[in-house]
Length: 283
Length: 283
DNA sequence: CCGATATATGTAGCAAAATTACAGTATTTC
DNA sequence: GAAATACTGTAATTTTGCTACATATATCGG
Image (cartoon, each protein chain N blue to C red):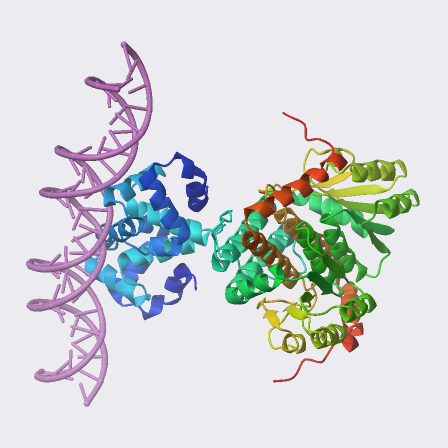
C-alpha cells in the first residue's frame, strides 16, 4: 500500500511523539524526503531515535529506507494498476485507463511467463520443418501476426483461422512439423481436437493458452501467462496483447538462435517491400 | 524527465567508469536504490567517488538525492526503458527486454495521443452507417482485431486486407460510411489511394497512422501516436501494439457512448459462443 | 612523436548522518 | 500508590557519503 496513506491510516496507533513526526511528514512530504533525520526531528520537535522508531513502525528498515518508500508513494499516484472504466469517464479518462491497464497486464504476463519453456519453444521452432499457427476468433489475429513475423525468416510457415483448413492441414502434418495453437481460454473444442489430431500424427504442439486447460493438457509445450482480465463487459483484450508480445519474444529468440547471417535475410525482405511505399522525405 | 530514461539516453555521454555504474543501475534499478554507495561501487567495480560523480552528472545533489529521484522514477510513469536486445542475451534477458520495451512504447503512445481526436473519432464511428477496417501486411491483424471488436456491437462492419477488395468496397461506399485505415508508416501507396478514393465518394476516412504522412494528409481524422521504434532488425511491433490498444480505446468509447442498453448486446454475443467451448470446471 | 594540458579514476581522511545502547520519564495497572 | 510497562531522550558507535588530493589516462598542439 501507498506509504503516505499508510501513515494517514495508522495515525491513531502512534504514540504522542510519533504522531508529531507523522504530522510533520503529512504536512509536507516533499520536504520530508529531502531532509536528514536530524532536520526532521527538529521540525517535529522530537529526538532523532524517535523518528527512526517511527520509520520502523511502518515496516521499513530505517530512515533512509523510509524516505525511499515515501518518495515512491509521492511519485504521481499509483501507476500501472488495473483501473476499470466507469460509465461516466471522459475520453481522457478511459484512454488513460485502458492504456495503463494494458501495461499492467503486460507486466503481470511477463512475470508469470516461464522463460525456460520459452527457450524450449524456441528450440523446437528452430528445428521445425514447417510451422503452422492456428487461432480462432480473436486469437486468429495473433496467429496472423505470428505468420507475418516468421514468414520473414524464409522458412515454411502457414496460418489458418478456419476450422476445416486447420483440420486438413493437421492431417497432412507429421514428425518435424510444429503446430502453434493460440487460445486464451484453452477451452475451444475444435482447437483441442486439433491438438490431439496433431499429436497423433507425431507433430509437435506448442500452445499459447491458459494453464491447466484442456488444450494445455493436449500440448507438448504450454506457454501460459496469468493475465488479470475483466471479461464481463469490455473485451478480452489483455491476453491478446500479451500473446502478441509473446510471439515477438519467440520470433526474437528464433532470430538470436539463428545467428547473424540470418538477420541479413530480414533486411532483404524489408528492402523488397520498399518499392510499394512512398519514399520518406528528407527534411 | 524520468531518471531511468535519462540514464539510458545519456549512456554515450558517460565516461568508461560511469557507464559501468549506469549499466549496473539499469540492470537492476530496484537493487540500486536499496544499496549503499559502497555496495554499488563494488558492483560496478569502480570507486565510490565515481558513483558520486555519476550522480552529480545527472543533476542530483549527491548519492542519496539520486536514489530518491530514481525511486520516484521507478514508482512513477515508466519503470520501463526501451532496452535493446543484444546478440548474447539469454531467454530471460530478451523476454524481459521485449516486454518492458512494449510497455514503454505503450506509455509513449499514450502520452502522444490526442484524446480530443479520439473523442471525435468515436463520434464519427457511432454515427456511421457502415464501418470498414483496412490494413495491409502487419497492420491487417489490427484491422481484424477491430472487426472482431466492432462486430459485437451489432452494426454493419467489415474488414479487408486485400488491395482489390478494399478498392471494390471503397467504390461502393458513400456518405455516412466510415473507413478506418491502418498503416504504421502512412506511406503505403495503395492505402493512400484508397483514402483519396473514399473521400471522393464522400465517405469519412479515419486513419491510424503516422503524423504528417501522405496517408494522414488524405484523411478526415488522424489518430497518430509517436512510438519509438527500432525497425532495423527486429520487427515493427510496438506500433502495432499501440494500435491495438487504440482500437480498444475506440471500441470502449463506442460502448460508453451507446450507453447501458447496448452492453446487454455484448453479453448476448458472449453467451452465444458458449456452446462451442468446454465448460470451465467448478473447483 | 613528444611534451603539455586536460580529463578521468582512485585513495585516504573527514564530516555527517543514522543507528544502537542505555538511562530517565511518563503511563498504566493492580 | 507502587510496580511494571511503554515512551522518549542523551550519548556513544557505526555506517555512510563526501572532499581533497594524488595518480593514471587521454587529447592536442607543435
